[in-house]
Amino acid sequence: REAGAARRAERRRPLAGAFGAALVLMGVTALTVVVDAVPAWADQAVILTSPTSPANSLHPSWTFGTSKAYGCELLNPDGTTFSPWAACTTPATYDLTGHPDGTYTFYLADAKGVPPPATEISNPSTYTLDTTPPPVPIFTSAPATPGNEKSPQWTFSSQSGSTTRCQVKNSSGTVISAYTGCSSPETVNLTGQPDDTYTLSVTASDAVGNTSAPATSSYQLLTTAPAAPTFT
Image 1 (cartoon, one colour):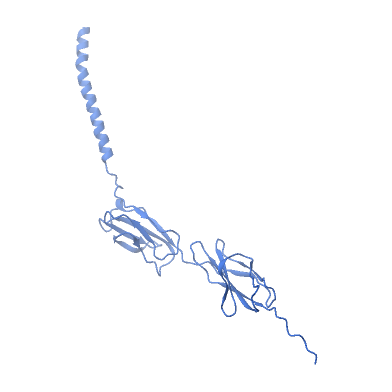
Image 2: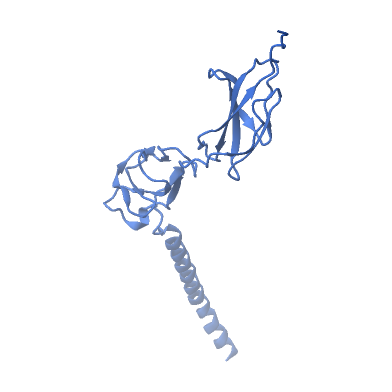
């Protein structure tokens, strides 16, 4: 009886081995199918570079590859279409002249239809157009005029986060001191300058380079003494 049981076990071994090999083979086959499967997003277009944002450029550009045909779309800040899906090549540049400030949205896709399949459209790339300058700075104090002080001083305020620049001209419009960075209080050096009326101009610029109109304030330098009295 023991010998018969041993022989039956021996016959089952090859069958078990064959079944195990089949399971391994099935496992490898299933794994191969998973590895080779193409996910739905595999054809999604990729934007390589986007414009700096926010910015005041009226001609933002996006770049992408050249290995296939592409389509592009640009949406307005309110979500309406600025430029509908159309064939495009890199770089895709848009003219925003005359259009409002706000956030524009760009999409790229393989050119396989209009509109293209959703699985082939890139992630959105946004560009915020900002062409609005800061408010004009406000003078909060100015030197008494006329005066004989050759180092007159002004104070002013400007929008938080803005940078200010100052310029000085004489009455004929000649620049005595060109626009350069300044801050309040601003002292103007008129040493060596003749008696005249001098005008200080102050502008404010924001982070993207929009510059306000200048605030101006004038000072009359008067250092010449009147003529000596005469006896009559």
